[in-house]
Image (cartoon, rainbow, N blue to C red):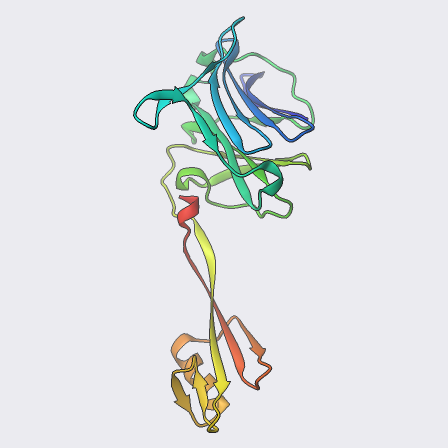
Length: 243
C-alpha cells in the first residue's frame, strides 16, 4: 500500500511525503524536497524505528544523535506492529505554509487514497502526524504537542495507518482522558451500610443520598451481588501520554 500526501497550490499538486506499507508490516515514510527524497523514517514490524537522510543517487545516511555520550545512529525501540493497541506514532513532518512553494516539491497526480491539503493563511504551518492504530481506535481532538487535530485520515487494514494534520504554531491544549471513579455502598455484618468501607449509614438509601448530595448524579449505577450498589462518576483530566 502506498499513501501520498501533498498540497494543492495555485492549481498544482505538490508531493510532500508518501507512506509505504510492506506486506510483512514494515511502514516507511519518505519526505520530499528540492525535487527528491530528503529523509525517511522506517517503523519495522519488530518495533525498530530508523531515521535516515536521503541524497540523490546515493545510499541513505543514518541520522546521528548523542544518546549515550557518543554519536550513534538514531534508532528507537517501540512496540512491534502486531502488538500495537490504540495509537503508536511513526513520524512527524511538516512545512511552513509560506515555504511550501519554495521547497521545490515534485508534482504528482492524486489518486483516491492520496491526501491533499489546501494551505491557507489561517494556518501558518501544516504538520502531519503519521501513526499506526489498532482497529476501533477513536479519533482524537488534540494530537502531537497538544495541537488541535485539523483533519484525520485512515488508510489500510493490516496495519491501519492514521494521518492527522495540525498547525505547529496553534496554541497548545492539554489532551484529556476519561477517568472513572467508582463509589461503593456495601452492607456491613452488623446491619449498617458502608460507603467505601468507611462512612456508616443506617440504610442503603441514606448512603446513596449522601453520595449524590456530595458528588451529584452519577454517570451510572450497578447493583452488587452482596446487595449493595456501585455509583460511577466520570471526569476528564489531562492525559500525560498525549502531551
